[in-house]
Image (tube, rainbow, N blue to C red; front, side):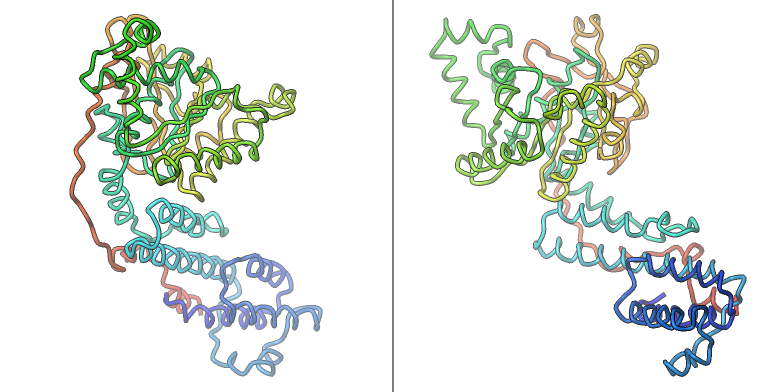
Length: 471
């Protein structure tokens, strides 16, 4: 169905409504059309004129009244009264699909011309899919959009540009962290969540990615010592365990300074703040922190923050601490929405570290370390907003054998892990996995309109054909 035919179809609806003279039907159809956001200007004027006529006659305008006001109604086709509601639903669904295609086409064009980054195109895609959602109309009509082009593009972008974990089972599925992502790392107390998050930002620093790490549990001194230990192991220097960093700084000061300077020379920078740096818990306070660190990063590296890590979500609160105690769900969901907006609108990759619930942990204990999405504590918005969810599970025996159980249980952009797998754990060096990322593939796909508009002929909604069957 072409966009320039939709005005004619709206005339068919309004003309058929007048022929029916059914006030109850009018009271159903006109609100459906009025509440719809994606009519074009000509259609809005047409509907506005009809509603005004209906108000003047305090009922349904006759077909004669319509023709007297607008001669073009004489070409309208008559839809059977019993089919009109169905036809209106199909009309609205097609309008949504047209709008969705338009948004995606423009976004893809701007992305391929280098006008916008992938993160902005991804946000446009998500907005477009919301526009095309069949839940917006009464009937559950399927969208006909073939998204394989987008999935292929997203995969290629992740392989080439995404920050890797250096954990094979994760990197084979998630492919890499990109701007606009909301990645959740979830696990129970003591399960190495912070270690996994730090792995990611350290790898990001080696790729020139800047990170703001907001640590609400571990002090910035302890976190820095862990990253220095990780750096010592990753760069073939004298490997220094995390617990030995303080001794190393005193007894081998020259070597310690070489380690620190080598860490500071990483192309990307990691700025850690902890709860002592946060005087007020509010979105405006976090905005101020982000602004300050952005200025610092631009001065040091020439570009702003790439990754924001929040560790962990359940330690967030409102200034009114009583509210946080009374309704922890509200707090987590509120801040998750805030960081989701930062990711989508400002192009940050956001990593949210989250506790799992006691029930979720007990389930994982009985199922070889496997978590369900419902196992995240106080976080229905966290489940919904996340582009990916990685769970970690450890036991004392696992730590002794240098293994951690890990699983990607949600992946909006590709396959997830059906079962948890074991990954190498080097807890003394603040490290999970081998630290070796998958090699980037030199793939630069070009997509055309045909890739966007592949339509399944059996599922396509040809409004003209449906109209003929209902005359």
